Length: 428
Image 1 (cartoon, rainbow, N blue to C red):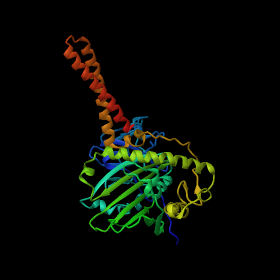
Image 2: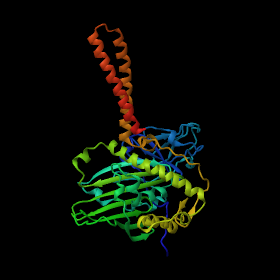
Image 3: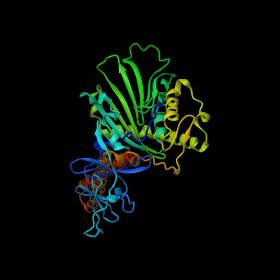
Image 4: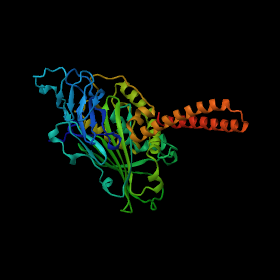
């Protein structure tokens, strides 16, 4: 029997565990199905459908108390496993009906990522989570980053599996590329099955590479949501890679969970604040975003399949073609998809929205950046009040030296306020 891919009976990455606050409600979606992630005071995680069974209000707008979540519409309460425990309007001698319960789903934390099982609970096994073995090694350092993007998951995967665009689209960006290094690329597709794709690649025409520390560069697509780049070094003790997990939030919406890892990052790299790396990634993703939004619009408006629109090049696009052809072969049960020769459109297409500010796509999801942003706001307000007080104080001073000193302090306050406003823009 031919292999098949079932998008429901899969694990999906939701967030980095460190970014989910204690006693919090975190809404998310998978293919436009809405859910909530709950973390209680003991840091236990549970997942429920984001729908009150009473009148279909969203539980994500409710309140999380001691072991219960309360719907804000009529006060129905549910424990963290979805059992209804209180209906204020129910007569005292009546039992709570079974239909008043909320559907719950398996959720686990593995390698610092929160994973959600979309399908039949009985079929979920933790060993099916696409882990990265090198992460488990004690000397491995990781950098994690999360961002929401305004296009379908397949366009994100196409983008991150596209090695050829890096030196052109991200020329001159730290962590990006250099257009002088853009070359034809030799790809070797080693495997393509319902489980994903494995390949090797190398640039052609770089000259003598005998002094290179690399033996091989590999990339793997693990269906449905991981692109994993690994470098094989001549020194077997070294390892590094890039794990790019994606979540299909819905039509024209997806989430990227980026993880860079290595056991030979420099001390400077290890000491770098998380927000600074995130600013770099925001810059790179916003460059891609402008291009992919235009590509997405052109393709979707055309009414044509990709094989009629594209003119692919073997030494540039082979991995992208392999992925789109994988969707042709195995994407048949997806709610919507776009392969190379086939596609399925959503039943009720939504009008595209394109949030491109750093706060909406990243800051609000990241505990570190949200904290730094809040502190910058607080500090800016404090300096503004201090500026007002110092200005009033200076008006009443008679001593010229004291007045000059106060004017200097006022200038410093103004400089600090302007500097903080500029710093805030990194997160907005």
